[in-house]
Amino acid sequence: MPSGLFATPRPTPARLVPAMAGTAAIVVALPVFVVAGLPLEAWGIAATLWLAYQAIGLALERVRLGGDSLVAAGIVAVGRISRAVLLAGVLIAVAVSDSTIGLPAAIVYGIAFSLEFVFSVLAYMDGEATYVDGEAKS
Image: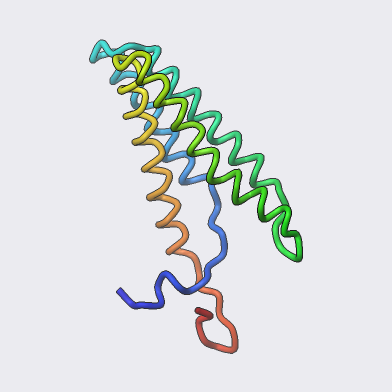
């Protein structure tokens, strides 16, 4: 792997394909829960948290970045970090109160989150590198 691969800036990829990959995991999990006899409350919690995660992501996507807007950059940075932490905190609280619901919910949410992350990285790496004066900017 070239050393500049991760250092080369690329445009922000579209969120649709990664979000759909995670959403597909949530949708596929429903019949698995039904057939396996797992509590549907767990699936409902995972699906609700996934929808909240995506809604917060859409709201943060609307914040204009660029220029000298340090406040906007701070809002997006804190929002992106805290949405994952806060929603994971909800899953932990559910798991502590009832592990038969919390554990399956955490597994489904974790799979969806992981799929979205992998597809996001692949989309980012597939993007064209930003070039300055004919050379990759690193």
